[in-house]
Image 1 (cartoon, rainbow, N blue to C red):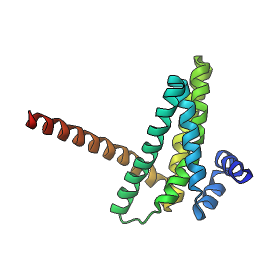
Image 2 (image 1 turned 90 degrees about the vertical axis):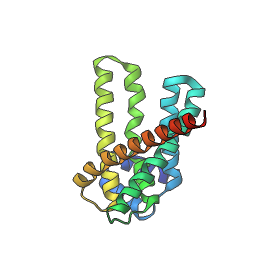
Image 3 (image 1 turned 30 degrees about the horizontal axis):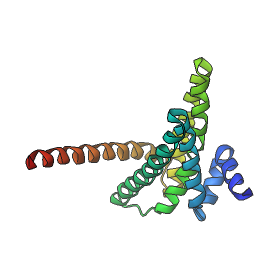
Image 4 (image 1 turned 180 degrees about the horizontal axis):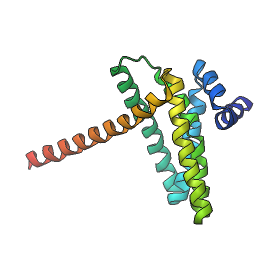
Length: 171
């Protein structure tokens, strides 16, 4: 348990050293617990216990898929990233999201600043985590991550469009 708490503390306050250490032996179960915990809080905020269960499911699936797409994109660009390392580091880089539900609940300008700060910290830490996991410069990752989201959006659009056309053909 103390190792998990040390990893969490380090991810918040000493990300460079912590991510370098985590990259050597990625604690995948700990990262999955963080993803589940972050999504439980978000789900409770959005829809109670039922919302928390759904949020955890979709949060974990999204974490796996987006990292999978990032892995495929990096592989297409000639990198050889470890999927396990990507998952572990981006899991720990999700810790700033824990500040979003309290910020939204607090509301007003202070809550808004808390949410904005948490989101900026989240994006910066995610970028740093992927850079550490892949040994790429952070600025290259900052350009690559939006491509991953764009690729996911295009793939989803094509899939939905194909399903709609297929259903239309069968009628």
